[in-house]
Image (cartoon, rainbow, N blue to C red; front, side):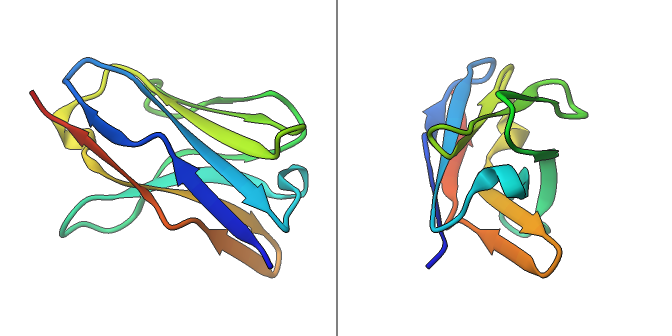
Length: 115
């Protein structure tokens, strides 16, 4: 059974950084396009980083340039490094693994940016 488990969320002050992790079981991330999404209360889920194919350590930058997705194929873990956090970044963050015919989500981890 496929399972994605996010961790690393929490409360951070504006301007701070967090690194989220997404560990997979029953799935090999190197065969999937990996991405991070977020959903704030009352808003639609949106893409924040990726998609990027696994098998390499550095997947590249997000369009916002504050969020960087990377991965460790040996650990079957994908990370989201978030820098310069703002209150509007407050949301539940989800890891996603996608390929043709398959789409998997984690349960999400809460990130709250507040002073």
